[in-house]
Length: 442
Image (cartoon, rainbow, N blue to C red; front, side, top):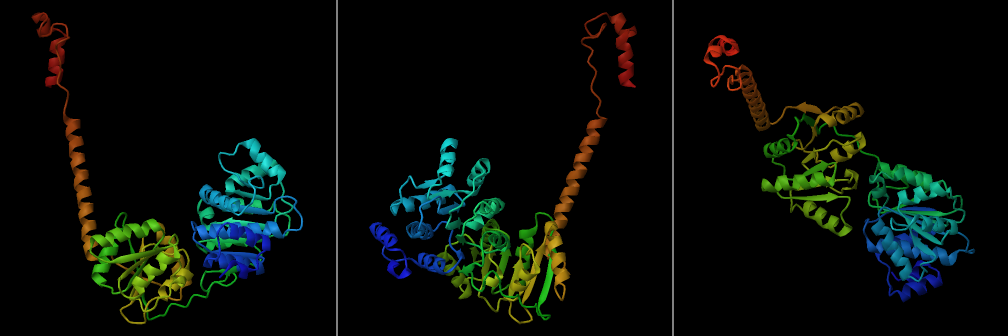
């Protein structure tokens, strides 16, 4: 789509053309189209996508050209990282916005200059949450003229522990404005923070999510085999591999709590000559589609998933789902169970370590039927028994060494005693040497 079709201001189109842009990419088209009709927009976007950064800059530029007055800060952009904030700043400069009117607050900006930026209310201010909040708090500043608030990479902002600062910043905006939220994930925490800083948002790019409401998870069929295994410390991967060896699944989805978890499992499966691919929230759309296709087409038997709800996976007839990390709520458990086929051999198993037990207990309370506890695989039991035996043997050896050490008495040294080997022999027979010899020989 050409930018002319997006109902942008004429001056905006002119600056875009000068910068050499002619056609809008899909993410640019989505952002610029939706933000025109929505009071607030939450859109799925890769956190490091340069096309997204350009779209944010274009949206900000269009606000500047359309506003009737030139008072105060019109656009406030809050990004998750200095690198992303700097990239958006560079795009705005590329589109002809003066550096005197578009300022990026970074760690190199001295305190006096930061104070001046806020006091003068530059047209566009770009910053990370912590830097902006600390500055606003010290200056007690209120924004009266903001037309557009941008939260770039909201999921990363939350992961960095800066989500609460956004709400405090938003309270200092008392004008009528639109909110643009770009995020690669739409999990529970993102929804919670979004609800504080947006009003009636349109949601784009998150499948069946409509206005923040996800599709209702289906009930777990009573025919489905579902059970859990309690895992001893440092034996989770061993248990996973043993279970896979026993079950020999043809199509298996394994859910972990993090990208790091999928990376570890990928290496573990690879050592066992098992083919696997992984999906996680940090992947680009292109890579995600390619990896998903490799599994969905049957080319690869194992799919490792992190930071993505099972509700977003368009999969059916899976014969095994493994919760390597137990989900935090019963709804996600139901979505994962829904991936399984109706065959009698299909099952869902949860590997429950000590820290997961409260989660599995909560799931059991909310499900119509409870997962059954199963014992550790036989080969894991043998390995555990051997470990305990080795630990016991090592403990006994240490105990014997300690006892032996305690029984050994130090040998006496007569060299410096009066009447010793080089002293008076009469004193050696009758004096203090005789006393100590008698004492140590007793």
